[in-house]
Length: 605
Image (tube, rainbow, N blue to C red):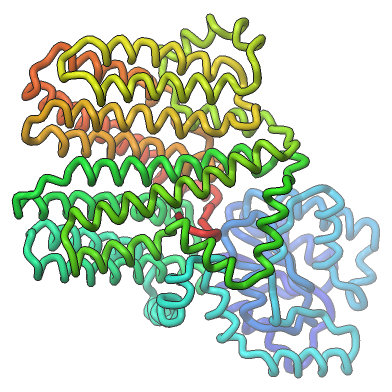
Protein backbone atom coordinates (compact mmCIF):
# COMPACT_ATOMS: atom_id res chain seq x y z
CA UNK A 1 0.00 0.00 0.00
CA UNK A 2 1.37 3.47 -0.81
CA UNK A 3 2.14 5.78 2.09
CA UNK A 4 1.29 9.46 2.51
CA UNK A 5 3.08 11.56 5.11
CA UNK A 6 1.06 14.57 6.27
CA UNK A 7 3.27 17.45 7.39
CA UNK A 8 2.65 20.88 8.80
CA UNK A 9 -0.01 22.35 11.04
CA UNK A 10 -3.25 20.36 11.17
CA UNK A 11 -6.39 22.28 10.21
CA UNK A 12 -9.66 21.51 12.05
CA UNK A 13 -12.30 20.17 9.69
CA UNK A 14 -9.83 19.39 6.90
CA UNK A 15 -10.76 16.46 4.69
CA UNK A 16 -7.25 15.83 3.37
CA UNK A 17 -6.62 12.71 5.44
CA UNK A 18 -9.86 11.06 4.29
CA UNK A 19 -9.20 12.01 0.67
CA UNK A 20 -5.75 10.43 0.78
CA UNK A 21 -7.20 7.25 2.29
CA UNK A 22 -9.86 7.16 -0.44
CA UNK A 23 -7.03 7.17 -2.99
CA UNK A 24 -5.51 4.10 -1.33
CA UNK A 25 -2.82 5.75 0.81
CA UNK A 26 -1.85 4.67 4.30
CA UNK A 27 -1.66 8.06 6.05
CA UNK A 28 0.90 8.95 8.74
CA UNK A 29 1.03 12.27 10.59
CA UNK A 30 4.43 13.93 11.06
CA UNK A 31 4.95 16.21 14.04
CA UNK A 32 7.72 18.07 12.26
CA UNK A 33 10.19 17.93 9.41
CA UNK A 34 12.55 15.62 11.29
CA UNK A 35 9.69 13.26 12.06
CA UNK A 36 8.67 13.33 8.37
CA UNK A 37 12.20 12.31 7.41
CA UNK A 38 12.07 9.43 9.90
CA UNK A 39 8.70 8.26 8.58
CA UNK A 40 10.01 8.42 5.02
CA UNK A 41 12.93 6.18 5.94
CA UNK A 42 10.52 3.62 7.43
CA UNK A 43 8.45 3.24 4.26
CA UNK A 44 9.45 0.03 2.42
CA UNK A 45 11.56 0.77 -0.64
CA UNK A 46 9.18 -0.99 -3.04
CA UNK A 47 6.24 1.29 -2.16
CA UNK A 48 5.16 4.69 -3.47
CA UNK A 49 5.43 7.50 -0.93
CA UNK A 50 3.95 11.00 -0.88
CA UNK A 51 4.59 14.04 1.26
CA UNK A 52 1.49 16.22 1.58
CA UNK A 53 0.95 19.50 3.41
CA UNK A 54 -1.84 19.11 5.99
CA UNK A 55 -3.18 22.53 4.96
CA UNK A 56 -3.83 21.38 1.39
CA UNK A 57 -7.12 22.48 -0.15
CA UNK A 58 -8.17 21.16 -3.54
CA UNK A 59 -10.19 18.75 -5.59
CA UNK A 60 -9.79 15.01 -5.03
CA UNK A 61 -9.02 14.59 -8.72
CA UNK A 62 -6.15 17.07 -8.41
CA UNK A 63 -4.70 14.81 -5.73
CA UNK A 64 -5.36 11.77 -7.92
CA UNK A 65 -3.55 13.34 -10.88
CA UNK A 66 -0.64 14.47 -8.74
CA UNK A 67 -0.12 11.41 -6.56
CA UNK A 68 -1.35 8.24 -8.30
CA UNK A 69 -0.33 8.36 -11.98
CA UNK A 70 1.93 5.31 -12.45
CA UNK A 71 3.71 6.68 -15.52
CA UNK A 72 5.99 9.12 -13.71
CA UNK A 73 8.65 8.33 -11.06
CA UNK A 74 8.29 11.83 -9.56
CA UNK A 75 5.22 14.05 -9.63
CA UNK A 76 4.02 17.12 -7.77
CA UNK A 77 1.19 19.60 -7.39
CA UNK A 78 1.14 22.59 -5.02
CA UNK A 79 1.35 21.18 -1.51
CA UNK A 80 2.12 17.58 -2.46
CA UNK A 81 4.95 15.57 -3.97
CA UNK A 82 5.26 11.83 -4.62
CA UNK A 83 7.93 9.36 -5.59
CA UNK A 84 7.73 5.83 -6.92
CA UNK A 85 10.39 3.31 -5.83
CA UNK A 86 12.72 4.23 -8.68
CA UNK A 87 12.88 7.84 -7.43
CA UNK A 88 12.86 7.29 -3.68
CA UNK A 89 16.54 8.07 -3.29
CA UNK A 90 16.11 11.41 -5.02
CA UNK A 91 13.24 12.35 -2.67
CA UNK A 92 15.17 11.19 0.40
CA UNK A 93 18.18 13.31 -0.54
CA UNK A 94 15.98 16.34 -1.23
CA UNK A 95 14.18 16.05 2.11
CA UNK A 96 17.40 15.56 4.05
CA UNK A 97 18.95 18.65 2.48
CA UNK A 98 15.87 20.79 3.15
CA UNK A 99 15.70 19.67 6.77
CA UNK A 100 19.40 20.36 7.22
CA UNK A 101 19.06 23.81 5.67
CA UNK A 102 15.83 24.81 7.43
CA UNK A 103 16.39 23.12 10.77
CA UNK A 104 12.83 21.79 10.69
CA UNK A 105 11.43 25.05 12.08
CA UNK A 106 9.67 26.47 9.05
CA UNK A 107 7.15 23.72 8.42
CA UNK A 108 4.21 25.64 9.94
CA UNK A 109 4.71 28.64 7.69
CA UNK A 110 6.19 27.01 4.64
CA UNK A 111 5.24 23.84 2.78
CA UNK A 112 7.80 21.09 3.19
CA UNK A 113 6.32 19.31 0.16
CA UNK A 114 6.90 22.37 -2.02
CA UNK A 115 10.44 22.79 -0.70
CA UNK A 116 11.19 19.16 -1.54
CA UNK A 117 9.83 19.73 -5.05
CA UNK A 118 12.06 22.79 -5.46
CA UNK A 119 15.06 20.78 -4.26
CA UNK A 120 14.27 18.02 -6.76
CA UNK A 121 14.10 20.63 -9.52
CA UNK A 122 17.46 22.02 -8.41
CA UNK A 123 18.91 18.52 -8.62
CA UNK A 124 17.71 18.23 -12.21
CA UNK A 125 15.18 15.51 -11.43
CA UNK A 126 12.29 15.14 -13.86
CA UNK A 127 9.26 16.09 -11.76
CA UNK A 128 5.96 15.66 -13.59
CA UNK A 129 3.41 18.42 -12.99
CA UNK A 130 -0.01 17.43 -14.34
CA UNK A 131 -2.20 19.96 -16.10
CA UNK A 132 -4.89 20.79 -13.54
CA UNK A 133 -6.98 23.19 -15.62
CA UNK A 134 -9.81 24.47 -13.44
CA UNK A 135 -9.01 22.05 -10.62
CA UNK A 136 -7.82 23.66 -7.39
CA UNK A 137 -4.63 22.64 -5.58
CA UNK A 138 -3.32 25.12 -3.03
CA UNK A 139 -1.81 25.55 0.42
CA UNK A 140 -3.56 28.66 1.86
CA UNK A 141 -1.44 30.72 4.21
CA UNK A 142 -4.30 32.23 6.25
CA UNK A 143 -8.00 31.64 7.01
CA UNK A 144 -9.19 34.10 4.36
CA UNK A 145 -7.14 32.39 1.64
CA UNK A 146 -8.40 29.01 2.87
CA UNK A 147 -12.00 30.17 2.62
CA UNK A 148 -11.43 31.49 -0.92
CA UNK A 149 -9.79 28.20 -1.95
CA UNK A 150 -12.73 26.22 -0.56
CA UNK A 151 -15.16 28.42 -2.48
CA UNK A 152 -13.13 27.82 -5.65
CA UNK A 153 -13.30 24.07 -5.04
CA UNK A 154 -17.08 24.22 -4.61
CA UNK A 155 -17.45 26.23 -7.83
CA UNK A 156 -15.89 23.54 -10.02
CA UNK A 157 -17.50 20.18 -10.79
CA UNK A 158 -14.67 17.76 -10.10
CA UNK A 159 -16.44 14.86 -11.82
CA UNK A 160 -17.14 16.88 -14.97
CA UNK A 161 -13.46 17.77 -15.22
CA UNK A 162 -12.51 14.15 -14.69
CA UNK A 163 -14.83 13.02 -17.47
CA UNK A 164 -13.52 15.69 -19.83
CA UNK A 165 -9.90 14.81 -19.10
CA UNK A 166 -10.63 11.15 -19.89
CA UNK A 167 -10.81 12.09 -23.59
CA UNK A 168 -7.66 12.65 -25.63
CA UNK A 169 -6.85 16.31 -26.13
CA UNK A 170 -6.14 15.68 -29.82
CA UNK A 171 -8.16 13.15 -31.76
CA UNK A 172 -9.93 12.58 -35.08
CA UNK A 173 -13.30 14.06 -36.04
CA UNK A 174 -15.25 10.80 -35.77
CA UNK A 175 -13.76 9.96 -32.40
CA UNK A 176 -14.19 13.46 -30.99
CA UNK A 177 -17.72 14.17 -32.18
CA UNK A 178 -19.37 10.78 -32.75
CA UNK A 179 -17.83 8.47 -30.13
CA UNK A 180 -16.26 10.29 -27.18
CA UNK A 181 -19.42 12.23 -26.18
CA UNK A 182 -20.88 8.94 -24.88
CA UNK A 183 -17.93 6.54 -24.61
CA UNK A 184 -16.55 8.54 -21.68
CA UNK A 185 -19.67 7.62 -19.74
CA UNK A 186 -19.12 3.97 -20.62
CA UNK A 187 -15.61 4.39 -19.22
CA UNK A 188 -17.01 5.80 -15.96
CA UNK A 189 -19.51 2.92 -15.79
CA UNK A 190 -16.63 0.47 -16.18
CA UNK A 191 -14.56 2.23 -13.51
CA UNK A 192 -17.39 2.13 -10.97
CA UNK A 193 -17.72 -1.62 -11.51
CA UNK A 194 -14.04 -2.33 -11.09
CA UNK A 195 -13.30 -3.17 -14.71
CA UNK A 196 -9.76 -2.55 -15.92
CA UNK A 197 -8.62 -1.00 -19.21
CA UNK A 198 -7.02 -4.32 -20.19
CA UNK A 199 -10.36 -6.09 -19.82
CA UNK A 200 -12.04 -3.51 -22.05
CA UNK A 201 -9.18 -3.79 -24.56
CA UNK A 202 -9.66 -7.54 -24.67
CA UNK A 203 -13.42 -7.09 -25.15
CA UNK A 204 -12.69 -4.79 -28.08
CA UNK A 205 -10.43 -7.43 -29.65
CA UNK A 206 -13.00 -10.20 -29.20
CA UNK A 207 -15.72 -8.00 -30.72
CA UNK A 208 -13.54 -7.24 -33.75
CA UNK A 209 -12.68 -10.91 -34.23
CA UNK A 210 -16.38 -11.78 -34.15
CA UNK A 211 -16.91 -9.02 -36.73
CA UNK A 212 -14.22 -10.60 -38.91
CA UNK A 213 -15.95 -13.95 -38.53
CA UNK A 214 -19.27 -12.42 -39.61
CA UNK A 215 -17.58 -10.87 -42.65
CA UNK A 216 -16.07 -14.27 -43.50
CA UNK A 217 -19.57 -15.74 -43.96
CA UNK A 218 -19.85 -13.89 -47.26
CA UNK A 219 -23.56 -13.16 -46.76
CA UNK A 220 -25.24 -9.76 -46.76
CA UNK A 221 -26.47 -10.35 -43.23
CA UNK A 222 -22.96 -11.26 -42.17
CA UNK A 223 -21.55 -8.10 -43.77
CA UNK A 224 -24.12 -5.91 -42.01
CA UNK A 225 -23.41 -7.58 -38.67
CA UNK A 226 -19.68 -7.19 -39.30
CA UNK A 227 -20.03 -3.45 -39.90
CA UNK A 228 -22.07 -2.95 -36.72
CA UNK A 229 -19.67 -5.02 -34.62
CA UNK A 230 -16.65 -3.19 -36.04
CA UNK A 231 -18.15 0.11 -34.85
CA UNK A 232 -18.86 -1.46 -31.45
CA UNK A 233 -15.24 -2.63 -31.28
CA UNK A 234 -14.04 0.89 -32.01
CA UNK A 235 -16.26 2.34 -29.27
CA UNK A 236 -14.68 -0.11 -26.83
CA UNK A 237 -11.27 0.79 -28.22
CA UNK A 238 -11.91 4.42 -27.30
CA UNK A 239 -13.35 3.40 -23.95
CA UNK A 240 -10.27 1.52 -22.76
CA UNK A 241 -8.04 4.56 -23.11
CA UNK A 242 -10.65 6.82 -21.53
CA UNK A 243 -10.99 4.39 -18.65
CA UNK A 244 -7.21 4.46 -18.17
CA UNK A 245 -7.23 8.26 -18.08
CA UNK A 246 -10.38 8.47 -15.92
CA UNK A 247 -9.04 6.12 -13.26
CA UNK A 248 -5.29 6.57 -13.97
CA UNK A 249 -4.90 2.83 -14.52
CA UNK A 250 -1.86 2.96 -16.77
CA UNK A 251 0.44 -0.02 -17.22
CA UNK A 252 3.20 -1.21 -19.50
CA UNK A 253 1.17 -4.29 -20.40
CA UNK A 254 -1.91 -2.16 -21.08
CA UNK A 255 -0.03 0.16 -23.43
CA UNK A 256 1.31 -2.81 -25.38
CA UNK A 257 -2.07 -4.56 -25.54
CA UNK A 258 -3.83 -1.40 -26.70
CA UNK A 259 -1.31 -0.79 -29.48
CA UNK A 260 -0.94 -4.36 -30.74
CA UNK A 261 -4.62 -5.23 -30.51
CA UNK A 262 -5.52 -2.26 -32.73
CA UNK A 263 -3.37 -3.69 -35.50
CA UNK A 264 -4.56 -7.26 -34.88
CA UNK A 265 -8.21 -6.18 -35.07
CA UNK A 266 -7.84 -4.25 -38.30
CA UNK A 267 -5.76 -6.82 -40.14
CA UNK A 268 -7.90 -9.74 -38.94
CA UNK A 269 -10.90 -7.86 -40.31
CA UNK A 270 -9.15 -7.53 -43.69
CA UNK A 271 -8.67 -11.30 -43.68
CA UNK A 272 -12.34 -11.81 -42.78
CA UNK A 273 -13.44 -9.64 -45.70
CA UNK A 274 -11.17 -11.55 -48.08
CA UNK A 275 -12.56 -14.89 -46.88
CA UNK A 276 -16.12 -13.61 -47.27
CA UNK A 277 -15.41 -12.39 -50.78
CA UNK A 278 -13.89 -15.77 -51.69
CA UNK A 279 -17.10 -17.50 -50.57
CA UNK A 280 -18.91 -15.34 -53.11
CA UNK A 281 -16.45 -16.21 -55.87
CA UNK A 282 -14.38 -13.00 -55.75
CA UNK A 283 -10.68 -13.30 -54.90
CA UNK A 284 -9.56 -10.08 -53.19
CA UNK A 285 -6.64 -11.44 -51.17
CA UNK A 286 -4.19 -9.31 -53.16
CA UNK A 287 -6.23 -6.21 -52.25
CA UNK A 288 -6.38 -7.26 -48.59
CA UNK A 289 -2.63 -7.79 -48.48
CA UNK A 290 -2.06 -4.52 -50.35
CA UNK A 291 -4.19 -2.67 -47.80
CA UNK A 292 -2.20 -4.17 -44.92
CA UNK A 293 1.11 -3.30 -46.60
CA UNK A 294 0.03 0.28 -47.27
CA UNK A 295 -1.30 0.82 -43.77
CA UNK A 296 1.78 -0.69 -42.13
CA UNK A 297 4.12 1.43 -44.26
CA UNK A 298 2.10 4.52 -43.29
CA UNK A 299 2.69 3.70 -39.65
CA UNK A 300 6.41 3.16 -40.22
CA UNK A 301 6.62 6.60 -41.87
CA UNK A 302 4.96 8.09 -38.78
CA UNK A 303 7.19 6.24 -36.34
CA UNK A 304 10.43 6.91 -38.21
CA UNK A 305 9.75 10.61 -38.67
CA UNK A 306 8.82 11.07 -35.02
CA UNK A 307 11.83 9.16 -33.73
CA UNK A 308 14.15 11.11 -36.03
CA UNK A 309 12.86 14.48 -34.88
CA UNK A 310 11.40 14.33 -31.39
CA UNK A 311 14.67 15.33 -29.68
CA UNK A 312 16.33 17.21 -32.56
CA UNK A 313 17.60 20.72 -31.91
CA UNK A 314 16.65 23.68 -34.15
CA UNK A 315 13.56 21.64 -34.98
CA UNK A 316 11.64 24.28 -36.96
CA UNK A 317 10.82 24.91 -40.62
CA UNK A 318 8.59 27.18 -42.75
CA UNK A 319 6.32 24.19 -43.41
CA UNK A 320 5.88 23.62 -39.67
CA UNK A 321 5.22 27.33 -39.17
CA UNK A 322 2.50 27.25 -41.85
CA UNK A 323 0.90 24.26 -40.16
CA UNK A 324 0.88 26.13 -36.85
CA UNK A 325 -0.84 29.09 -38.51
CA UNK A 326 -3.49 26.83 -40.04
CA UNK A 327 -4.17 25.41 -36.58
CA UNK A 328 -5.58 28.82 -35.63
CA UNK A 329 -8.27 28.42 -38.30
CA UNK A 330 -10.67 25.93 -36.74
CA UNK A 331 -12.12 24.27 -39.83
CA UNK A 332 -8.68 23.56 -41.34
CA UNK A 333 -7.72 21.59 -38.25
CA UNK A 334 -10.57 19.14 -38.69
CA UNK A 335 -10.08 18.88 -42.47
CA UNK A 336 -6.40 18.06 -42.05
CA UNK A 337 -7.15 15.53 -39.36
CA UNK A 338 -9.79 13.80 -41.46
CA UNK A 339 -7.87 13.58 -44.74
CA UNK A 340 -5.08 11.58 -43.09
CA UNK A 341 -7.77 8.93 -42.47
CA UNK A 342 -7.03 8.20 -38.78
CA UNK A 343 -8.39 5.08 -37.17
CA UNK A 344 -11.84 6.48 -36.38
CA UNK A 345 -12.52 7.72 -39.90
CA UNK A 346 -10.95 4.62 -41.42
CA UNK A 347 -12.93 2.14 -39.38
CA UNK A 348 -16.17 4.05 -39.91
CA UNK A 349 -15.60 3.99 -43.66
CA UNK A 350 -14.77 0.27 -43.62
CA UNK A 351 -17.84 -0.54 -41.48
CA UNK A 352 -20.28 1.41 -43.66
CA UNK A 353 -18.88 0.07 -46.93
CA UNK A 354 -18.87 -3.48 -45.60
CA UNK A 355 -22.55 -3.25 -44.69
CA UNK A 356 -23.67 -1.53 -47.90
CA UNK A 357 -21.33 -2.71 -50.67
CA UNK A 358 -18.91 -5.54 -51.45
CA UNK A 359 -15.46 -6.42 -50.06
CA UNK A 360 -13.85 -5.43 -53.36
CA UNK A 361 -15.36 -1.94 -53.24
CA UNK A 362 -14.40 -1.65 -49.57
CA UNK A 363 -10.77 -2.47 -50.33
CA UNK A 364 -10.64 -0.15 -53.34
CA UNK A 365 -11.93 2.73 -51.22
CA UNK A 366 -9.51 1.86 -48.43
CA UNK A 367 -6.52 1.70 -50.77
CA UNK A 368 -7.38 4.98 -52.49
CA UNK A 369 -8.03 6.78 -49.21
CA UNK A 370 -4.91 5.47 -47.49
CA UNK A 371 -2.76 6.16 -50.57
CA UNK A 372 -3.92 9.79 -50.62
CA UNK A 373 -3.37 10.12 -46.88
CA UNK A 374 0.10 8.59 -47.14
CA UNK A 375 1.05 10.92 -49.99
CA UNK A 376 -0.22 13.97 -48.11
CA UNK A 377 1.53 13.21 -44.82
CA UNK A 378 4.78 11.97 -46.33
CA UNK A 379 5.07 14.97 -48.67
CA UNK A 380 4.57 17.34 -45.76
CA UNK A 381 7.21 15.59 -43.70
CA UNK A 382 9.68 15.57 -46.57
CA UNK A 383 9.18 19.33 -46.99
CA UNK A 384 9.69 19.88 -43.27
CA UNK A 385 12.85 17.80 -43.31
CA UNK A 386 14.32 19.63 -46.30
CA UNK A 387 13.62 23.11 -44.93
CA UNK A 388 14.57 22.68 -41.27
CA UNK A 389 18.09 22.89 -39.88
CA UNK A 390 17.64 20.12 -37.37
CA UNK A 391 20.64 18.39 -35.81
CA UNK A 392 19.87 14.73 -35.25
CA UNK A 393 21.05 13.04 -32.08
CA UNK A 394 22.82 9.73 -31.61
CA UNK A 395 19.65 8.41 -29.98
CA UNK A 396 17.64 9.24 -33.12
CA UNK A 397 20.21 7.53 -35.34
CA UNK A 398 20.14 4.44 -33.09
CA UNK A 399 16.32 4.35 -33.19
CA UNK A 400 16.30 4.56 -37.00
CA UNK A 401 18.92 1.81 -37.22
CA UNK A 402 16.77 -0.40 -34.99
CA UNK A 403 13.67 0.37 -37.07
CA UNK A 404 15.62 -0.57 -40.21
CA UNK A 405 15.68 -4.19 -38.93
CA UNK A 406 18.93 -5.06 -40.69
CA UNK A 407 19.96 -8.70 -40.48
CA UNK A 408 23.39 -10.37 -40.48
CA UNK A 409 23.88 -10.07 -44.25
CA UNK A 410 23.36 -6.29 -44.30
CA UNK A 411 25.39 -5.82 -41.11
CA UNK A 412 28.35 -7.76 -42.49
CA UNK A 413 28.30 -5.93 -45.82
CA UNK A 414 27.82 -2.56 -44.07
CA UNK A 415 31.09 -3.00 -42.17
CA UNK A 416 32.97 -3.38 -45.44
CA UNK A 417 31.18 -0.47 -47.09
CA UNK A 418 31.56 1.95 -44.17
CA UNK A 419 34.73 3.75 -45.41
CA UNK A 420 33.19 4.35 -48.83
CA UNK A 421 29.83 5.40 -47.37
CA UNK A 422 31.44 8.23 -45.37
CA UNK A 423 32.52 9.89 -48.63
CA UNK A 424 29.07 9.79 -50.26
CA UNK A 425 26.52 12.67 -50.28
CA UNK A 426 24.01 13.02 -47.46
CA UNK A 427 21.06 11.81 -49.53
CA UNK A 428 22.74 8.48 -50.30
CA UNK A 429 21.00 6.40 -47.61
CA UNK A 430 17.37 7.00 -48.63
CA UNK A 431 18.29 7.05 -52.34
CA UNK A 432 19.97 3.64 -52.38
CA UNK A 433 17.28 2.19 -50.08
CA UNK A 434 14.63 3.37 -52.55
CA UNK A 435 16.49 2.17 -55.63
CA UNK A 436 17.35 -1.24 -54.21
CA UNK A 437 13.81 -1.77 -52.97
CA UNK A 438 12.30 -0.63 -56.26
CA UNK A 439 14.54 -3.04 -58.16
CA UNK A 440 13.52 -6.14 -56.22
CA UNK A 441 9.82 -5.19 -56.19
CA UNK A 442 9.79 -4.41 -59.91
CA UNK A 443 11.45 -7.69 -60.88
CA UNK A 444 9.04 -9.63 -58.66
CA UNK A 445 6.09 -7.86 -60.28
CA UNK A 446 7.21 -7.81 -63.92
CA UNK A 447 8.95 -11.16 -64.47
CA UNK A 448 7.49 -14.63 -64.57
CA UNK A 449 7.34 -16.86 -61.52
CA UNK A 450 10.38 -19.10 -61.18
CA UNK A 451 12.70 -16.88 -63.22
CA UNK A 452 16.15 -15.88 -61.91
CA UNK A 453 15.75 -12.09 -62.02
CA UNK A 454 14.07 -11.62 -58.62
CA UNK A 455 16.97 -13.51 -57.05
CA UNK A 456 19.50 -11.27 -58.81
CA UNK A 457 17.58 -8.20 -57.68
CA UNK A 458 17.43 -9.55 -54.10
CA UNK A 459 21.22 -9.89 -54.05
CA UNK A 460 21.50 -6.28 -55.23
CA UNK A 461 18.97 -5.35 -52.53
CA UNK A 462 21.21 -6.87 -49.85
CA UNK A 463 24.09 -4.64 -51.00
CA UNK A 464 22.03 -1.45 -51.29
CA UNK A 465 20.49 -2.13 -47.88
CA UNK A 466 23.96 -2.46 -46.40
CA UNK A 467 25.11 0.77 -48.03
CA UNK A 468 22.05 2.59 -46.71
CA UNK A 469 22.91 1.76 -43.08
CA UNK A 470 26.70 1.84 -43.41
CA UNK A 471 26.88 5.17 -41.59
CA UNK A 472 24.66 6.72 -38.87
CA UNK A 473 21.21 7.72 -40.14
CA UNK A 474 21.45 11.43 -39.32
CA UNK A 475 20.67 12.92 -42.75
CA UNK A 476 17.64 15.11 -43.42
CA UNK A 477 15.71 12.32 -45.14
CA UNK A 478 17.29 9.26 -43.52
CA UNK A 479 14.02 8.61 -41.65
CA UNK A 480 12.70 7.33 -45.01
CA UNK A 481 15.07 4.34 -44.94
CA UNK A 482 12.94 2.08 -42.65
CA UNK A 483 9.71 2.72 -44.64
CA UNK A 484 11.51 1.95 -47.91
CA UNK A 485 12.77 -1.33 -46.43
CA UNK A 486 9.28 -2.26 -45.20
CA UNK A 487 7.69 -1.54 -48.58
CA UNK A 488 10.37 -3.51 -50.43
CA UNK A 489 10.04 -6.63 -48.28
CA UNK A 490 6.24 -6.67 -48.05
CA UNK A 491 5.61 -5.90 -51.73
CA UNK A 492 8.12 -8.51 -52.87
CA UNK A 493 6.20 -11.15 -50.93
CA UNK A 494 2.90 -9.88 -52.34
CA UNK A 495 3.98 -9.92 -55.98
CA UNK A 496 5.76 -13.26 -55.83
CA UNK A 497 2.70 -14.86 -54.23
CA UNK A 498 0.45 -13.28 -56.87
CA UNK A 499 2.75 -14.49 -59.67
CA UNK A 500 2.64 -18.03 -58.26
CA UNK A 501 -1.04 -18.00 -59.28
CA UNK A 502 -1.94 -20.96 -57.10
CA UNK A 503 -4.86 -21.18 -54.71
CA UNK A 504 -3.73 -20.35 -51.17
CA UNK A 505 -0.50 -18.52 -52.01
CA UNK A 506 -1.84 -15.04 -51.29
CA UNK A 507 -3.45 -16.02 -47.96
CA UNK A 508 -0.11 -17.59 -46.97
CA UNK A 509 1.66 -14.37 -48.00
CA UNK A 510 -0.88 -12.40 -45.94
CA UNK A 511 0.02 -14.50 -42.90
CA UNK A 512 3.76 -14.06 -43.43
CA UNK A 513 3.55 -10.28 -43.85
CA UNK A 514 1.28 -10.08 -40.79
CA UNK A 515 3.84 -11.97 -38.69
CA UNK A 516 6.75 -9.82 -39.89
CA UNK A 517 4.70 -6.63 -39.46
CA UNK A 518 3.99 -7.63 -35.86
CA UNK A 519 7.76 -7.84 -35.28
CA UNK A 520 8.18 -4.37 -36.73
CA UNK A 521 5.37 -2.91 -34.61
CA UNK A 522 6.84 -4.59 -31.54
CA UNK A 523 10.17 -2.90 -32.29
CA UNK A 524 8.42 0.47 -32.45
CA UNK A 525 6.62 0.02 -29.13
CA UNK A 526 9.82 -1.01 -27.36
CA UNK A 527 11.65 2.04 -28.67
CA UNK A 528 8.78 4.36 -27.71
CA UNK A 529 8.88 2.91 -24.21
CA UNK A 530 12.65 3.49 -23.91
CA UNK A 531 13.08 -0.26 -23.58
CA UNK A 532 15.46 -0.60 -26.50
CA UNK A 533 15.09 -2.70 -29.63
CA UNK A 534 14.35 -6.44 -29.65
CA UNK A 535 17.40 -8.60 -28.87
CA UNK A 536 19.89 -9.17 -31.64
CA UNK A 537 19.38 -12.93 -31.50
CA UNK A 538 15.75 -12.43 -32.51
CA UNK A 539 16.60 -10.19 -35.48
CA UNK A 540 19.27 -12.66 -36.63
CA UNK A 541 17.02 -15.67 -36.13
CA UNK A 542 14.35 -14.28 -38.44
CA UNK A 543 16.97 -12.99 -40.88
CA UNK A 544 16.47 -9.23 -40.97
CA UNK A 545 14.50 -7.61 -43.79
CA UNK A 546 17.15 -8.25 -46.43
CA UNK A 547 17.65 -11.88 -45.37
CA UNK A 548 13.93 -12.66 -45.49
CA UNK A 549 13.61 -10.97 -48.89
CA UNK A 550 16.52 -13.01 -50.25
CA UNK A 551 15.12 -16.28 -48.86
CA UNK A 552 11.69 -15.61 -50.40
CA UNK A 553 13.28 -14.95 -53.79
CA UNK A 554 15.42 -18.08 -53.54
CA UNK A 555 12.34 -20.16 -52.74
CA UNK A 556 10.47 -18.64 -55.69
CA UNK A 557 13.29 -19.71 -58.01
CA UNK A 558 13.83 -23.22 -56.63
CA UNK A 559 10.26 -24.35 -55.86
CA UNK A 560 7.15 -24.98 -57.85
CA UNK A 561 4.17 -22.70 -57.26
CA UNK A 562 2.47 -25.23 -54.97
CA UNK A 563 5.68 -25.85 -53.02
CA UNK A 564 6.18 -22.09 -52.75
CA UNK A 565 2.75 -21.75 -51.15
CA UNK A 566 3.66 -24.38 -48.57
CA UNK A 567 7.00 -22.68 -47.89
CA UNK A 568 5.27 -19.33 -47.30
CA UNK A 569 2.90 -20.99 -44.85
CA UNK A 570 5.75 -22.64 -42.94
CA UNK A 571 7.68 -19.37 -42.80
CA UNK A 572 4.61 -17.49 -41.59
CA UNK A 573 4.06 -19.94 -38.74
CA UNK A 574 7.74 -20.05 -37.78
CA UNK A 575 8.19 -16.27 -37.73
CA UNK A 576 4.93 -15.78 -35.84
CA UNK A 577 5.87 -18.30 -33.15
CA UNK A 578 9.34 -16.83 -32.60
CA UNK A 579 8.37 -13.15 -32.51
CA UNK A 580 5.20 -13.67 -30.47
CA UNK A 581 6.97 -15.80 -27.87
CA UNK A 582 9.75 -13.24 -27.40
CA UNK A 583 7.34 -10.30 -27.44
CA UNK A 584 5.02 -11.79 -24.83
CA UNK A 585 7.99 -12.74 -22.63
CA UNK A 586 9.39 -9.23 -22.80
CA UNK A 587 6.18 -7.28 -22.18
CA UNK A 588 4.97 -9.48 -19.34
CA UNK A 589 8.38 -9.17 -17.67
CA UNK A 590 8.42 -5.39 -18.24
CA UNK A 591 4.97 -5.15 -16.71
CA UNK A 592 6.02 -7.09 -13.60
CA UNK A 593 9.06 -4.89 -12.92
CA UNK A 594 7.06 -1.70 -13.33
CA UNK A 595 8.57 -0.36 -16.55
CA UNK A 596 7.19 3.02 -17.72
CA UNK A 597 3.81 2.85 -19.44
CA UNK A 598 3.91 4.89 -22.64
CA UNK A 599 0.37 5.43 -23.91
CA UNK A 600 -0.53 7.19 -27.13
CA UNK A 601 -2.08 10.56 -26.25
CA UNK A 602 -1.78 12.09 -29.70
CA UNK A 603 -3.64 11.71 -32.96
CA UNK A 604 -4.12 8.03 -33.82
CA UNK A 605 -3.16 6.53 -37.16
